[in-house]
Length: 468
Ligand SMILES: [Zn+2]
Image (cartoon, rainbow, N blue to C red; front, side, top):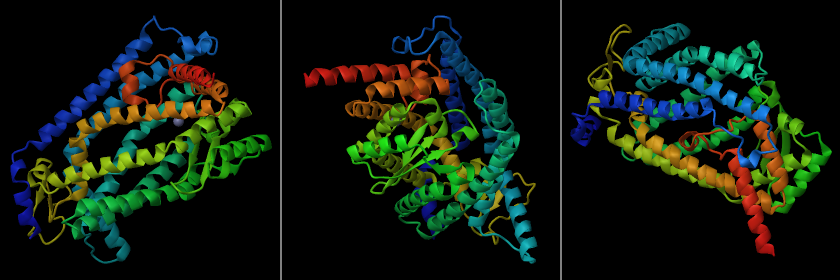
């Protein structure tokens, strides 16, 4: 019954060369990103870079050279790592069917051993097994790059505070987390797709929204504490000032925590977390407290509260939900397309007695119904161009919000302290000072510090004019 309707739905896409188009898109995307990276690389290599006007007298020549050297080192590393990732990506795309066959065979034999009787997983479980095997393969293949980034690149500039044993522990914890936290929702997603064939976009949207809320609580209660230690703030003066600020702004503050960000890196930061309509907790990195004065930390929090006051988080959430629904509606069009799966060596055989009838060493995967997770992966590759545009749009939106939050801190009378804190963050994080326009449009969610300082000065002057 399901199958007849599928063939009718997608009759117009039976000749679409999915594999060629996806490979083309992936390569074009890669070339675009290389072009953007090359522009930044060329800028950092050039000799006519100068300390921007707004940073003059605040950042010395030595820091300027060091910051850009760090940017250059990151840029070189990125060139190599992205090329390797691209090769892994393309190789995996061609090997989906083999990975599928192996994952089903491994999963069946593990479960048969555990249960002490021959066991055949359902098709939904086959998807989960495929997910686990392919994530595990990717994690191992990416390990050398991640190792190099921490222990060579970050180490060279004095950021790495991680020991090798912590790196190993982190990698194991992350792999287990991704596999367990990914498998459960994936299984439920499979059930929803199977049961609600008619209005699946709506049901999945509801499901994912529930998942996001669940993940939020899990992140706060389980995931973050697995990696870091959160301690209540032990600085009375800072605590009093933050409480006074929260009161002044009507910010529903519950607790203030300090997190040992310095355990892994000396990069520093602060943020607040909490769902809309709920009390929020503020988290400050120990590194920020160490490097900045109390008033500067309070100014940074003034900026963070600005985000809350202007509903930036809710707006982002809404944009994300719209994006997600559009994604699902498009996915609905290709989800049950026989040609798309055939292009990746998946043969759908509804008459098959078992969910997967192909053997591990076979080039083709013969499955009794559409492997939805494979479809999801292939489809995400297909819509990379819209994701790219979306990325530009989201960055633009986010940068606009950053300026607004800065202005809010200025209105609280914290403009000067915020400027000092931003310069300090720039120095401790060694943020690249010279940034190419297209590079920053594509990669940066925040304006560069010199742009922010200029905007703060301009807004402060405007405010002064208004009050006169
Ligand atoms: Zn911000």
